[in-house]
Length: 193
Length: 406
Image (cartoon, rainbow over all chains, first blue to last red; front, side):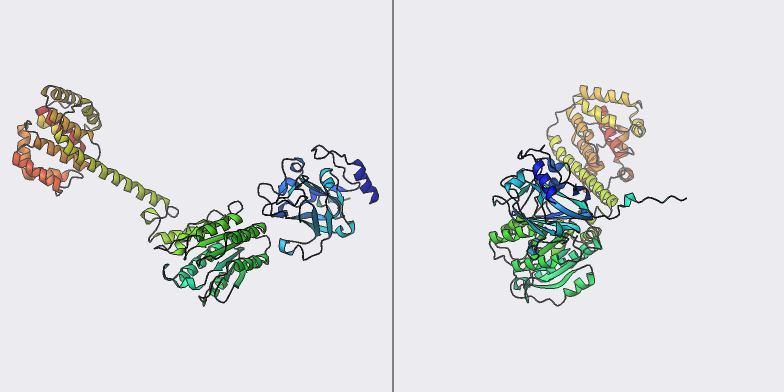
């Protein structure tokens, strides 16, 4: 665990807000974007022209011009189901200095939460992001033990760096590993002798 | 998943919507429930009151139409509507819907005055938007100055990508439900449900918004046929009116003798049944020759009146009666016309004329204008036209007869 996080810290290039800045995936982890079940992804209070896919999807999330923005107020509630059970290791948030997210609460395996009941459950983890986190492509490590068996993740963004009415997020990336469940594609017919 | 908020406050006793506001509202609610449940079997609808005994949920969102209709019975009218509380309760009811993947929608019937500020309504709207709830408002009943604005502001705050709508229904003849049928509240995002369309058709047979009482959706060919025949009739009437106007103007100014007019109209007329006329005139049966002669005549004779009259008659295409009437009139008025002796004798036989007129399609001998002309015709003894089978041709030959004989 320590080795993974130092590797991430050491390899991260400190060029702020450069789209070409390479992200060092923590050792032994994969980018879980491939395992996201896109049909179930929901985001409450998003601005319809700046939607969650801008922040999550592979190609668009690296484009600085496309971002996720909040609508009525600064809070956002993102629900991400996975196709497989995964273990979450770290999460990366990238956003502008002022309107980027600050307090981020993560809930594992809680379906269909609303703004009214986010505070009813204790979060699996809480991240307090600084501007460094947002600028430097540095994934924030999560409490690994709490995210061993994750089917779906709910991300509640409570406020942003400057307290403005709109929260903007350029990119959200999740790193972790899959639990060893059967990958149906690998199933092959046993050859007859 | 939809929650319908019913306004059953004291304001609903008013009778400006037949039979009473409350009853009209109840009919509309029943219709909406039916439309929703029928358009998709998974749709759920719930009903709650905003006034009466208080803000209460009568039935939680369900797809069972019977249950929904049953709960509408025995509702009492009274007290005042509490819109803010009602919307909160509706939100809660929607939050606990069985199928979390359904879209959340609130339909609010607001018939009593709105006592909240715009600000408060906007906050309510924002909260709905934040939770991804759409809102439809039916604004009816009481209307003070600010109510429509306030409600529009509420919808503007809730609206995201045109999923929320507001309908203002003023009191009047049309039932509340009929007015709602054509609104997006019914047609919704699916782009029209079968139920709504058929209900619209049924309602359209009476005092309908559709032309000719036929819904183009239901029977497009019939609607099209009706529309075409209406237009034809209208064109015919216009032509008649125009000719009547031209009649009077032509008898006054007889100065335009453009042979080109004659040309074009003569070219149009069917030469086939010229024979009858030609025989009597003892002229060559060839159209062109007759045409030449007519032209020559009209040039030489300087009987501009006749030529003009012929022009007018022949320049008019279309209706039968006016042509004939006009020609008759012209022939009567032009004193220079001498009649072909044979023809005049023929026409002086009144019964013969009548019988021939009867045989003409579209000419009604009982038509007063025709009758008058016939009378004047015989009194002056100057009838000199041939009446062919085609009335248009009759005009043509009439005109020619006039030219040739002048």
